Image 1 (cartoon, rainbow, N blue to C red):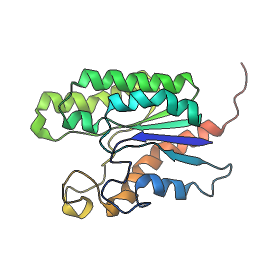
Image 2: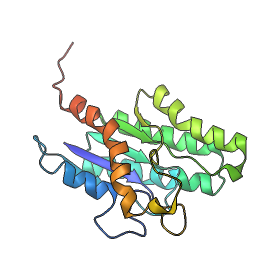
Image 3: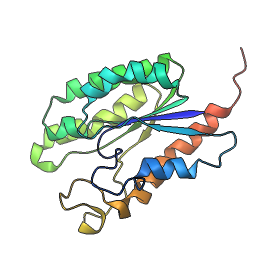
Image 4: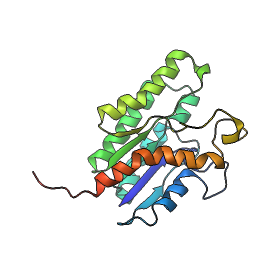
Length: 190
């Protein structure tokens, strides 16, 4: 089984020691799984949903994953890009993955309140609505359980530090574990 992570700096170990991010921790956690699980991290710092969409088809063709974790949208939100555009890009990415037989996990993120209530609320709701519409699994908020304190964030106050990575992994694993089990079940013809 292969898990493909398509994300941004939150998954690409931006600003932290290499191999200490949640994707690396996931790889180590699943290293003894039976059957084996390979984790491929195709995350790029600064990536947007547009960039992810541009890369998605070739990533799917190259890696043929059983599960795709999409952790994108934070940079769209921080740039104030239209929610409708991010939604359309995420929808296309999910469709591409599902059309190739992969299970999809969408990872929710939120924008700071200074973008205005309407924008922030629309952005937050987008992830849940897409998950429901696509019958995909959802991590409602990647940062769930992180206190809004310096203890879990780098000096920029946006990127989680090394101490936060096990919490991010826990948030992912709560949703990923049942998806792994479902992907391993044999498919019986109807």
